[in-house]
Amino acid sequence: MRHFAGGEVAHEVLQRLLEAAHAAPSVGLSQPWRFLRITDQGLRTAIHAQVQNEVQRTAVALDTRQDAFLKLKVEGVLDCAELLVACVHDAGPETEIFGRRTMPAQMSIASVACAIQNLWLAARAEGLGLGWVSMFEPAALAALLRLPADTSPIAVLCLGPVHAFYPLPMLQQERWREPRPLSELVQER
Amino acid sequence: MRHFAGGEVAHEVLQRLLEAAHAAPSVGLSQPWRFLRITDQGLRTAIHAQVQNEVQRTAVALDTRQDAFLKLKVEGVLDCAELLVACVHDAGPETEIFGRRTMPAQMSIASVACAIQNLWLAARAEGLGLGWVSMFEPAALAALLRLPADTSPIAVLCLGPVHAFYPLPMLQQERWREPRPLSELVQER
Image (cartoon, rainbow over all chains, first blue to last red; front, side, top):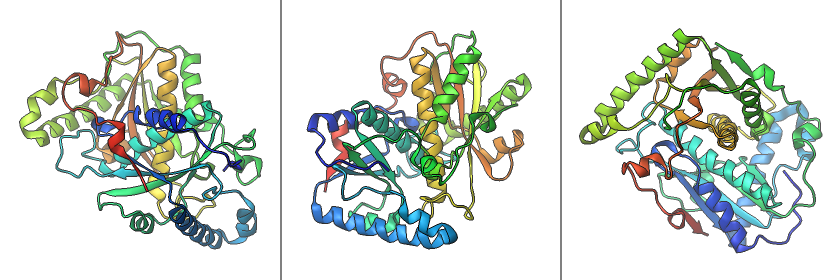
């Protein structure tokens, strides 16, 4: 996660980013993405508390690497200029949205991820940093946001001006994990 | 799905596309994407048969829109220049890959979808068409490809030169489904 530099994201820039997301492909043109822009400061604080709760649980689960983990910058919920929550809308089985009969949940999540990746690339092109926080309990966050039963949060997106971009993926730079070369992940059949 | 124009994808172009995919963000730098390049013609034919089987099941499920569905170009497995299968590798619960404790399968799928969306945008920048086919039974395709138990196919990717790009999303142009405006999918909280 980048270190956010405060400031703000101009309305028209945010609109362009959301339009980039909305231009993503989706299974059966289902457009299952739902975006919440969090402007209520109390709500932002409550989201931060949920994330920090999961950060602590993650630290415990990491056991011997707990101390190293807690030194990483893994979320910017309070310090980013714009906080978005991206959700997956489940069209349910009774629909004419085809292409998700055998993998319904997977394909809806994949579609939303394509939208988020578009938004991410567009943000970078605008000189803005983005971090995808997945450390939360989806049911608890859905309750906090009063989401309908068919809508689940998949990402807390921290967006805004940053002091600098990392020259390498942060977890590589901080020597948490070495990335694998592409050649190991491609095979021919 | 685009109408593919035969031809081929130069090796260095394919390599650039895979590098774009491999540059995607991933949960905990887990890089859960695995790509198979299908070069065996018999295997391509067998994949096509699995896809066509699911196309038929989808048509039956669509009931009154069956005929209209069967007129759509929903796959290009036999006619695309390059056929790739993108898979999700499940790191399992016992790992130091953080950020997927509460949504393990979802976050791995989301990471692979980000990689595919990168590959898609890079393909378009190279003037190549790409179609994501999700109409297959993942267990049957995994068996055909002899994938290890921790690896599941999420996408059959049809890639190559096309006669033309659609001016609108194909399902919109063919009046299968109207896209919704962005404004309906964004809320403030």
